[in-house]
Image (tube, rainbow, N blue to C red; front, side):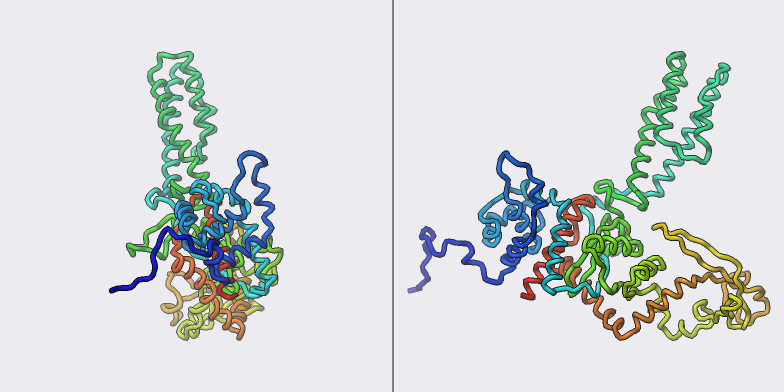
Amino acid sequence: MNTFKDYTMEQLQLPLSFEDFIPENHLVRVVNTIVDSLDLEPLYDRYKKGGCPAYHPRMMLKVMIYSYSQKIYSSRQIAKALRENINFMWIAGGNKPDFRTINRFRLGMKDIIEDVFYDIIKLLIEKKYINMQNYFLDGTKIEANANKYTFVWNKSVKKYDARLDEKIREHLREIDHVVAKENQIYLDEDLEELGENSRITVAQVESVVQSIDKKLETTPEDKSLKKKSREFKKDILPRKQKYEKSLSVFNGRNSYSKTDHDATFMRMKEDAMLNGQLKPGYNIQIGTENRYIIGFTIHPNPTDTKTLIPHLKHIEKRLGRLPENIIADSGYGSEENYEYLEEKKLGNYVKYSKFHWEKKKKNRENPYLAENMLYDIESDSFICADNRKLKHIGNWKHVTEAGYETQRNIYRCEDCSGCSHADLCKKSVGPRTIRISHRLNELKRKANENLCSEQGLKLRSRRVVEVEQVFGRIKGCWSFRRFYLRGTDKVKIEWGLISIAHNITKMALEG
């Protein structure tokens, strides 16, 4: 006869406390301890006095952090876990807020999420988990919660807007010609104001519509004017309003999504179709030390070059100081960024675009490259492989998208005729011309010395382990590859929660 252990569903069993079922060093206990140590007064101040009592904000914050550490990001799934998962039941004290309450609390964290995050960073510094010495900076692109086919492109809008401006001018010429037959001056000021090269604004179109309506009051039988008035009101003005609104949304970007105006179309590493398809997303910049996330910023631009300075300024503002050394890949190596690191007296371990390229023997020994030409300081000229001089003929100034003004010195050979090296030295028909930035070369030289030093070699080898391991946990282990909320403020809430969850989880593992 088979024997089984006793199975009686109705019988009460001890212990009755949830806490007795949770191991001593469980992650949920660490989350509870860390959040209890924080000053959440700014969070309390957001609640109104009186009325129906709200769920305790400290409890809600614990639930949000712990849920993100468990790969649970949906408010409905969090509400489900509060009813079914014993760890959630314990940390919530038996409270069971519904998904609407959970989502409302999360959306209300946009003003305090960074305060909570940086309070935990200060706690990590105090407990010696991090010391703000080596700051490993890198970025990743996370897909936005937006339709990937509802894109709006800056160039297209400008093209259609220019066509509409030309159409408006043609209509105004026709109207002015018709009215001039009656020996009346009409819309002359409008035609002068709407110059051929200037962009027509919504206000100007509205002014034209008012002028036409005013004219129709005196000549209501004019069918051509009625037709123009109808076309301006039903077609031209709405389109002009649409284009002007789109141009204001771009704010220096090349594109945006109709379902999330803050998202920009970028190339993602996660490309299921393997065709380089653009998707709406955000450029997330993080800095790590000992694989803790020390700081993060959200950027709409897909390239990393313009993110370093805003990111470090934000860290300095929040923590009151900057790390000693900055370590980053070649995506951040620009003259503007190097100047900033020099100004702040920070250790520059940021690669530049040709750092590995110039280490190859074939490039290092190529006498025709501008980088390998001899420079004569006294005559301010370069000497080519045929021992001819490339003299300084002028400067070229360029202002970057971030507003930084850089200068390139232009050097040109006086005469390349009869040179036996011409076929290998130059591709153009005219004499060899090169553009050089002496300041950038000096900054690159300093960066190269740092990167090739003993400490630089150690930091370079640690960089891929530091940052990529963090991204690996978040995007790989925790499957966080797409935001659930829309808009920069809400995206910041989600990334703040995921960063806090990562840091506390790592603290729990280290004990």
